Length: 256
Image (cartoon, rainbow, N blue to C red; front, top):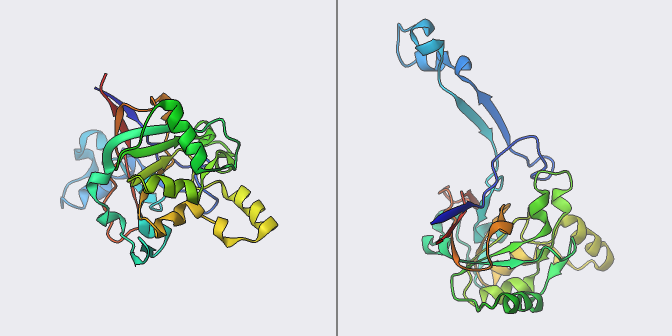
């Protein structure tokens, strides 16, 4: 068995999210925390601790959509499946999160391109695969090589509403991307909006969940190391009550 890590590290000081949405991590080292240990043991002094050291601990200021995470249908809209209440991340069926994976390679598509059902079908034909219900479909875009670089948020293609529904109609319930968003970068959508003022193009891939509820992974990594098929993906989300997303250590498991 071989395991490929599909998760980026939670990190500060890199281009991982839009300005104002980035995670912040405060690192407290062993020399910073003796007082934290001593408060539990009255009368003990710092020189009685090994090396005068406390513990290492980190303080996080983050959002549920920082790092590699799984979006719940609730993130996309308040309803799913044509009007039902959208489920939150603690309600996502766990069987959705451990299934055979399928990789679609869209690295050749231009930045900002909106993927169509026909392009999904063409790629599935190329790799010789027919989708089965609950398979986890991940898309390898140009964003994978740009993570952490200044232009990351503007790199890669996105999945359109029609292409997303095409997957969901075949029983897919978890998808994933190495981009910041399942949709095309907002910088390109903003240009299209300025031209046609059609609100339907905004977050169209996400909003497909209003018709058929589904989850997707964002900010995956190492998708280029995966074969097209022949692996399983594990992406169980951190269980946050009533939340729109949960952090996940997504991995691919290959039987060598």
